[in-house]
Length: 178
Image: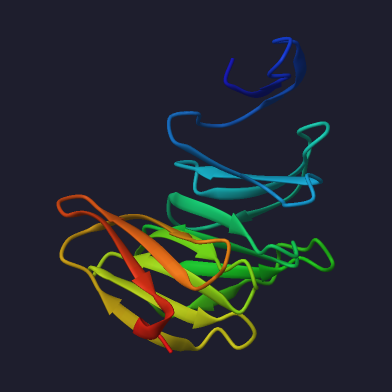
């Protein structure tokens, strides 16, 4: 029985448990207001779940493994990095049927800036691509010395940390992309 299960950290009490198709590689992200939990993995499906129950209210077949999932800080957009392509969804209506497919190739990681102006994708071609959150047009491409493992914006939105497999962590400031 393969399940996604939530527990209360303080008590260890099970909150909910829901069946999943393939638990071998699962990516998770909570919305910032705690209402939603997005999950995805090697079953190549993005699920949007109610965080309090774990019940999947919508799903979308990704066509590839979910490598990373992120919500914008206003919870209006969700982005998924996959081993095939990257996609975003407008979550105002909580409808996953109409993704915006981004033409940036295979991606490994995704992060939104705290001010919601940018969404960054770590790409398989050893770059980080910064996209305008409103238009999803590429604003800047930051070359990396090796494969990008993870990315994270500083809360001030002026710095971006990039972890690569062979070269550690690099911190980019906004001078690199403005």
